[in-house]
Amino acid sequence: MNLVYLVTPVLTWLVVGPIKFLITSARQRRWAFNLVGNGGFPSNHSSVVTSMATLIALREGMGHPAFGVAVTLAFIVMIDANSLRQHVGRQAAAINRLAADDSRYPRLRERMGHTLVEIGGGILTGIGMGFLVNALF
Image (cartoon, rainbow, N blue to C red; front, side, top):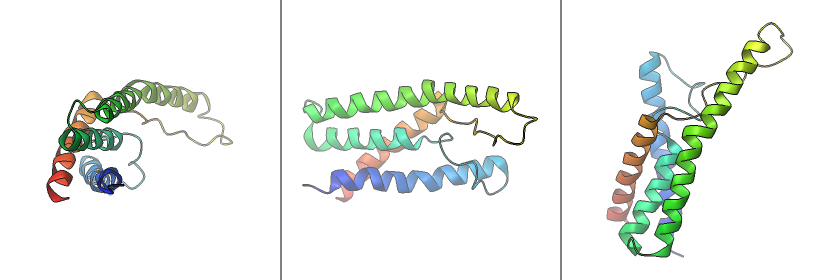
């Protein structure tokens, strides 16, 4: 097994996480340890799947079946990040409003999904990481 296909998503995740943390901290004008998670710029999930699709395209070619699988997975992840998880966040906001006066219920995280700009940033970061890993390894 060529370990570059295992290293790429891990390395991408490790690079994008601190970038997201620093961008979120700059926007909030404070260290944002409790704000980084499922949401924010750039999208970690989009970066990871795009880096793999890019690496497969560069190493195996766009005609290879693995590239088709990677692109399909990327679309599923990005659609999920943009639509489903945003709906979950809206439901969390509604539940938080309903339970605002009841201390028995913990406040749910409302920021769950990604905007198209955040996903686009993840795509660009993932493409860059795919090219970087291909060049270095």
